Image 1 (tube, one colour):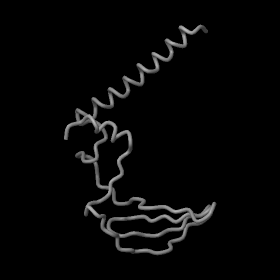
Image 2 (cartoon, helix red, strand yellow):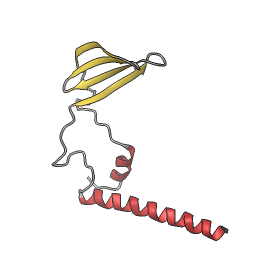
Image 3 (cartoon, one colour):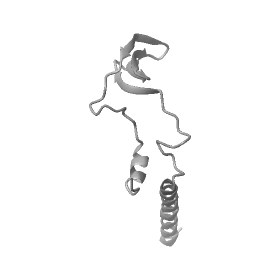
Image 4 (cartoon, helix red, strand yellow):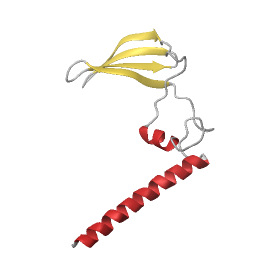
Length: 113
């Protein structure tokens, strides 16, 4: 293959990726994308608050369900509840922390609120 074919391939790849990004942006603008506050979106009741590795095989996981946290140790063959029914601490801003994927943040940059 000569260099002209490589150039055509790279330009076609850039064009297709641009089409995908443009379509995602358009769907977000029209409200058809994956929005956090949509009509059909339900509130998530469970989330991982924090994880910590104990050693190469075990880790501690702090899970929040509704307003209660549970500390769990997860290993390769077993899982154990270390502490349950820990009252959830409020966040400094008083609201629930929501994880927003980086791609959704990228799409939200151009969307007026």
